[in-house]
Each structure stands twice: as C-alpha cells, then as structure tokens.
Image (spheres, rainbow, N blue to C red):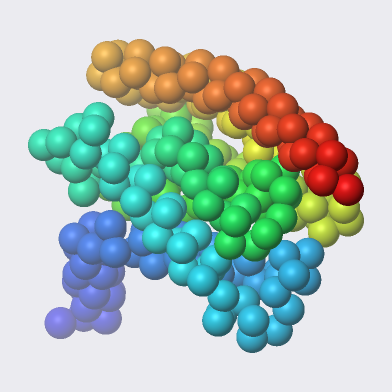
Amino acid sequence: MPVGGRTSVILSQLNQFIQNHSLFIVGVSCLLWVVLVLWIIREPLGLPGSKLFTSPFLYVYIFAAIVSAVVFSLITDPLTGFYFSVRHHGLLFLFPAFIPLFSKLLKIDWRDIADIMACTLPGLIAMTRLSCIINGCCYGRCFPGTQTFIPLREIVISVLIAVNLLIIRWYRHGRAKGILLPGFAVFYGFFRLLEIALRFNPDWSNNARDRVFAIIYIALGILLAIVISEFSETQKKSKSKNK
C-alpha cells in the first residue's frame, strides 16, 4: 500500500475511534481541566501541595460536576441521556446548587466558593464543546459570498479558554468576591445568543431551545448574585452577633 494510502487509512481509523469514544474523551478532558485549575489556585483554596489530592473537596467537586451534567441530561432528554450529558447545560443550571456543600467542606464563604467554581466552569464548557467538533455539529454560517464556514466551534472554545484564564488571574490576585460566577453566567448567556445567531443549523427548534437556555443563564446570573450577596450578609450579621 502506498505511504499516502496507509496514512489515509490510519487517519480514518483514528477519526472513527475518536467518534466512537467521544464521551470518554470529553470526560477525561473535563477531569484533567478541573484538576489542573484547582492545582493552579490551590494556595487561595488553602490546600497547598499534596493536600489538594487528599482533600474530600476535590473528589466531591468532580463528582458533583458529573452528577449535574448527567441529571440534567436525564431530566431534559431521557431517551438519549448519556449523549446529552456531554453538553454543558447542567454545569450552569445544577452545579451551583452544590455551593453550600463545598462551602462546608472548605469552611469558607459562599462567595469564595462561587469564585472557585467560576475558575473551572468556562474551561469545562469548552471541554464539553469538543464534542461539537468530534460529532460534526454546530457549524458557523458561511462567510458572505463564499462557501467557507465561520470556524464557530473553534472560536467559541478559544474564547471560553481565554475567559477562564482571565478569571483565574483575577481570582489569584484577590480581585473577586462573589462576582465571578454570576458575571460569567450573564456573559455566557449573551455570548451564547451571539453564537446561535452565527450558527448554521437547519434545525430551528433546537436553536430555539438553546436561545431559551441562554436567556435563563442571564437570569440565573442575576439570581446568583442576589442569593450569594444576601446569604453572605446574613452570615456576617450572624458572626457579629456571636462576637
């Protein structure tokens, strides 16, 4: 077999393997991202060195992220549950519900937990969006006057990674206190609406559902800001009375 033909066969087999194991690849990518980010911010977490890997927080955090994605999948699309679980909606809708548990494990303020969560979420969403590339969906529209698609999926992933790095920088420099997670939810809602507007997808009903989700992200961000702020103020007053 010619070298070019052999290379083509290998690439075809590799592509088939990736498509058949897309859920596994996305899952491992998400896991590695969480561990990497929590390692980067381990000192602000109060878990320096190997303490991060012996802390229940790390494993509960990973488990909660998985549960959030899977439960949301089963609720919204029970027939194709595990395929849908590679999508990211559960991370924004259900994952924040674990803030009280994480706060108890680390014994720190809700606002700090929200900021920690914001340090991983954009990258986690980016990792789940790898499935769009693997499965060949969510193409961008064609550039005007051409047949060339906008590399929409790649742009979305790149923007999310850039936003995540910026959030980590803010967090490590102590410039955040409960604003990062609500702020990201609002940002992502508007960013998602822009993405949907640039998407080529004949299935308009699916686009409509994604638009609804995007609007909910914005509302969720505002609600989170109010809840986190109110609860933190209540905690402060309670501590003041105890003193």
